[in-house]
Length: 114
Length: 113
Image (cartoon, rainbow over all chains, first blue to last red; front, side, top):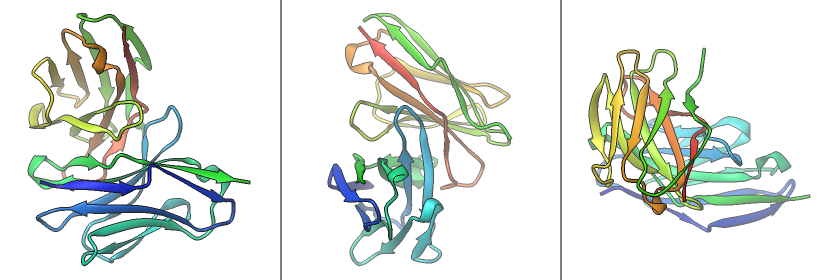
């Protein structure tokens, strides 16, 4: 069965600092991986996705993630945090056996201090 | 291009009641997935509809049921509401391609008292 683990339910960084949100996955097949962001009282917005092409994936708002098969990881990074990055971030894996349903991690809340 | 819309935005029900949540998929999308997001948790897959047929179901009891219409909009019905059904219900639509991006609506916040 596929699963996703996000390390750290809450991450706090200073504005301008590096953002690193950790995600590890478990999958018996080549995974399709996603990062979504959720702002308060809103739905989820796709930041980026990995679909077995380049291992370094660039997304919106300056975010990127690197797929590392040997470490079963797909960590999300951004070189310089902005106040507007404060939100909840979810890592997800797509289950091809169930029509591509998404299996989400528990989420990481990112706080950005001025 | 119209995105995914959901109605109502908020809903308050009492235990034992029934509720219907609605979702309009994004133009050109024929697949709708429903997720339940409890407070402080990641979304949990309820079920998916593809071209009006159920195409996968998560670990939810039969009192959670759904429907997809010819225009690919969808309904989520929950019978015999329980307190633990209080959550944000998210609808997502996607196109034909497996593992394609799912576009999420803003959700319906259901409170069961």
